[in-house]
Image 1: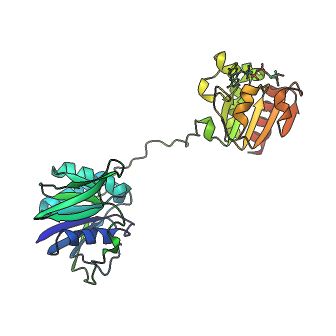
Image 2: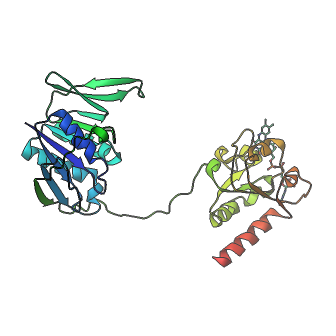
Image 3: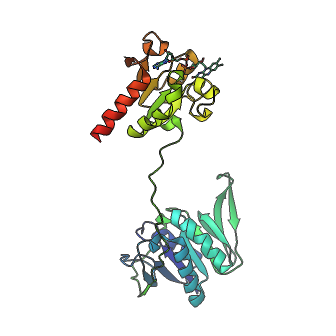
Length: 310
Ligand SMILES: Cc1cc2nc3c(=O)[nH]c(=O)nc-3n(C[C@H](O)[C@H](O)[C@H](O)COP(=O)(O)OP(=O)(O)OC[C@H]3O[C@@H](n4cnc5c(N)ncnc54)[C@H](O)[C@@H]3O)c2cc1C
């Protein structure tokens, strides 16, 4: 008789059938225990013999350290032959912790179970799926994570009801402590920005003002090479042939002439506004809106207008 523990994720009963089917493939004579960190879990017809429902805080339901510690404890009391997880994001975090704690191996991402005499062979893809590795673990408990939905259609589930339900709880660990809050940082890569406020030599001494405008419009700052070459800004925000090709919805070009090397970087821009003292600068001919005048005055007025309406 094999004693098998399957670990069910809180809020996710999609894959428990895989785990039961794998348990039945391992051995028909088995005792299947399930552990769930969701006390409201609702599994009616299954092959599970014993279900342990754990009452714990919302944070601990997804805390891989807490869950791993609990599984380790229950294994020490019950001495399972096999411990099974789903190879989901959470399962992939918990399983290695448990394996380390129990000093055993872990076969991750199992897609098939085979038998070789007495041995249970766990099959998993290797080398980007070009090969399949057959793995036998000679330590107990044998641990594996099962690739979701690989065993779902095996129809080994019968209508046996869960025999026994145990309840237990974990004392809140306060493991999640909010120490500080940060505003989500805006994307740093100008290639993935929707709004770019871009400056050229015409705005060199007032470049810092671009950051205020970018903040107000929830965008990022970029620049022409003129400013990069002279050390005003870093190269990673340079637009153009020797910089980056950008694709924002809105590009505001402030004091940028629009040489061919700069314009190459603008081919995917959806809307272009340029502000230039010289309305005959090349960039004005490819712009949707041209503002003839001083770029610094334009920024100040636009910032004031936005801040007034905030
Ligand atoms: C091989 C090679 C690769 C290059 N790659 C790039 C590249 O990837 N990206 C790039 O940007 N450049 C590149 N360059 C450089 C490019 O040729 C230009 O020299 C550069 O783009 C000019 O930058 P700019 O438009 O900011 O400055 P300028 O050419 O000096 O133009 C400034 C503009 O601002 C206007 N202006 C001035 N004062 C004001 C004001 N107060 N208000 C409003 N408007 C004002 C002027 O009328 C003018 O149109 C490359 C050059 C070479 C040779």
